Amino acid sequence: MHKKTWFITGASAGFGRILTEQLLAAGHLVAATARKPETLSDLSEKFPGQIITPHLDVTNTDSIRGAFNQTLNSFNHIDVLINNAGYGHVGVIEEVNDQEVRDQFEVNVFGLLNVTRPILAHMRERRSGTILNISSIAGLTSGATFPIYCASKHAVEAISEGLHASVKDFGVRSILIEPGAFRTRFADRASLRTSENKIADYKPMIDDTFQWIKDITGQQEGDPEKACAAMINVALEENPPLRLLLGEDAWIRANDKLNQLKSDFDRNETVTRSMAYDN
Image 1 (tube, helix red, strand yellow):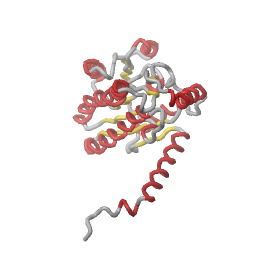
Image 2 (tube, one colour):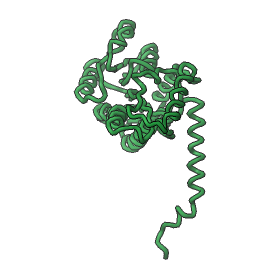
Image 3 (cartoon, helix red, strand yellow):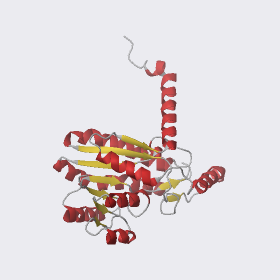
């Protein structure tokens, strides 16, 4: 297999860490970026010359520029970008304040865009490259207690679709990864935040959400090793799809959404198609 250079955000844990481990084991070169690069020191010792661990805060443009330049200085080019950094937020619409919404989008959306732009320009100039944006099944569906997180992932979906349409003629591919529940550290404090504002009427709903998170943590059916192997494989395909759903739960929820959309569209077909001026 031809050795490629991969740039991964959020590589210290979860999918990012597993992707890094699998890629190094397969002989690839990896820029494994993280806010705490020291968490990857064991991999640097085990795979000298194959990995660099630049500090990267996706909300800081100087940090992004530094990680990008360090990667080019070390490996000359970037073949694959994996936008993995992100976190979730629990809180109903009425509870979530403006700053919490902005913080969510700052990381999950603006951070992704700011990392993507310089690497995309590099790939476009080389007429070669692949960008994997880690979305979620939440990018296709939403729920009562995760609406802001879901909104950020919906934005990632739109960005990725537009990206695909704009760069496909330049040899650059855009792929959306839409996982369901996997046994990663998503429920950790670093990956999941909650609204400071609490409204009593919503407390049972929020309590049920956190109980569900507690119940499934460590019991999720999704194997992250399999998910990461699938991500790597799709990135190496000659003609990859725009989307890759991962997990039985993702498959079910996506198809439920398809059925819901079709039901709504069909129900209102007559009205929808009667908007033209009368002749």
